[in-house]
Amino acid sequence: MTDRPTIDREFAEKFLKSADTPLDYGVYFLFHEWWEKAPQKAIDAYSRELASIPEAAPFIAQRFISEPLSLERLAQCAPGTLGHAYRRFILDNKLEQNLGRNYRRFNEELTASGKLDRLPPDLSYMMVRGFQIHDFLHVLTGYEATPRGELALAAFYLAQLRFPYHAMRVAVTAAHMAFLRPGLIVEAMDAFVDGWAYGRVARNLNFERWEDELDTPLETLRARMGLNRTSLAA
Image 1 (cartoon, rainbow, N blue to C red):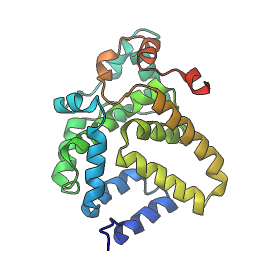
Image 2: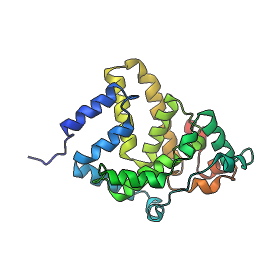
Image 3: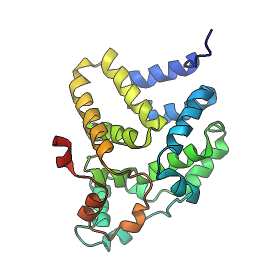
Image 4: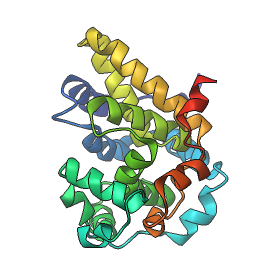
């Protein structure tokens, strides 16, 4: 008899709850619930996936978390720069609260809660850093803060990082459309395929200090990171 990992049945109920109502019980909650009873083999495999990314180790070793940015600082950025586009994205989507969040304290609070005791330190760090740069990745990739844009960006993340949060996003959406909303299949799959293909051809965006690039022209950064949409049609 093989020692095959299985999905904990108590957690499976929470997964189904998220698949039923993904906007009410989102992947954010599901992600935090998984670790307590997650198969150790799966946790170890995710750790190996992260360690296998060439850019990961030197960046993760720094444990860099940026101090909160301000709209005043972003307002100093010239048109055409990353900072200018980032400010516009924040204002257009009413995300000012994301801008001012203290992610270092956020990480400390999550650790103290005990819910993430089995989450390996490197994965824990990348979870917090991922939240911090999420809106930067919207700006860099061009994916809007819409349902389709969020699904595409989740697939982009998964192509580059292979992180459990984004894998869960794909799994929850797939379950929701398969069993409840077949009319969503074309839109969701188009978004996933687009994001996955884009993430595979671009340089990895997850191990950069984007906060240090606020005054760099956005198109310069896109060229540097291989964010060329025309390459997808090749």
